[in-house]
Amino acid sequence: MASLATTVAGIYLPSCVYNASGPRTGSSAAMSKIAASASGGVLAKSATVESQTGNPQPRTWQSAGASLNSEGLPNSGIDYYISSQTITDTMGDNAAGKPYMVSISGKNLADNLEMLKAISAARNADSRIAGVELNLACPNVIGKPIIAYDFDQMDSVLKAVKKLGLYDDIPLGVKMPPYMDGPHFEKAASVLNKYKGMVNYAASINTVGNAFAIDTAAEMPVISSKGGFAGLSGKAVKYTALANVRKMRELLDPSIDVVGVGGVESGEDAFEMILCGAAAVQVGTCHWTEGPKCFDRICDELKTIMAEKGYSSVDDFKGKLKPWSKEGAAIARAAKKARQAKEGGASGAAAVAEGGGDIYVILTQILAIVVAVLLADKLGIVPLSI
Image 1 (cartoon, rainbow, N blue to C red):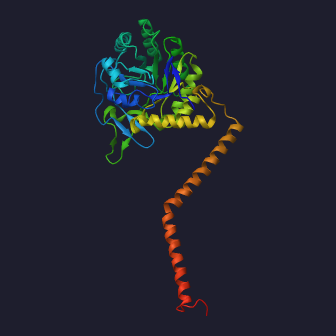
Image 2: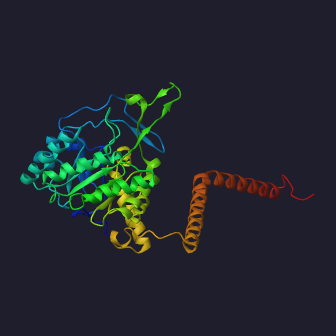
Image 3: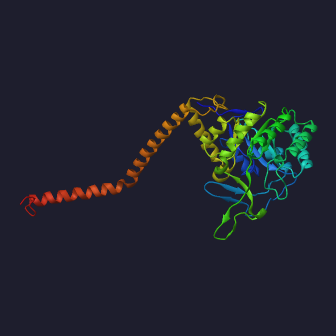
């Protein structure tokens, strides 16, 4: 049977698919449902020093192909997420050995450093805190820029974290925004590489900032805060996310893992992320809309794909994306043709099943007419020949 086990930043995950920080992660009650699912671990809500309610409602919006959110980091404060009681309430007996990880997104550098110190102290008392994700990519805090778009500022933040001297032994990841230009990929990777040994993974990507949707009936934005501007997520960002995962894996030092996040809704999506070099995959918007049962479905779908391709572990295909070739294109065409034939057969069978009742009614009526005519002829009521 295919195994989904992997490691990220040296942290063992029994499944390579787990939750992104954000949706359904604000409380232990919500996170316990993640822990009880097939998710490989639990990543808590991005925390601030103090609890906060976030931006005014409505601050989220859903459509078939995309989602918008401008939540503004509503959370219960760092002390809540690093408390032993919260971890116990979230993880339970944790027989599967899943990791519990925290995420932080301070309003300024001083806040981030304060929280990192608090996490280190809490981890000394409770080793169940497996790692930390430093969010330098949030686009939804009013008046605050995306830190990881200012490479000098990102460097200064990581330099200050390094100076703490606390995170050489505590797994540390950095949540990254989406990059669109080659030089930006290179600059971002060079900053992270500068701190290899402290930075253990990069999670790419956060939402695409400053998206906009309009309610045409009301002739107004669908989001109330920030003038309607919000972070774009869901299926619409998948291809940008794949590109970021691919480029980061190409540019980062091998000691820095890549975690793929953005638009993952299926086992196939997860498979593609891993092919591009992701050591693990986070699920955000799909978890938001479908709930924690999405992890069971996505993991099952990924196992099916692996079994069909003869892969027994994630390492069998991780980062092994093949270059485009004529041979590969022929394989793709054959697979598409087979899929269409299968879908056509299935839809035809479904149509018969769905409309079968009507067909049987018509056949029955025709048979009844034939029988009636034959009987009439036999009785001499209506001769069939003249």
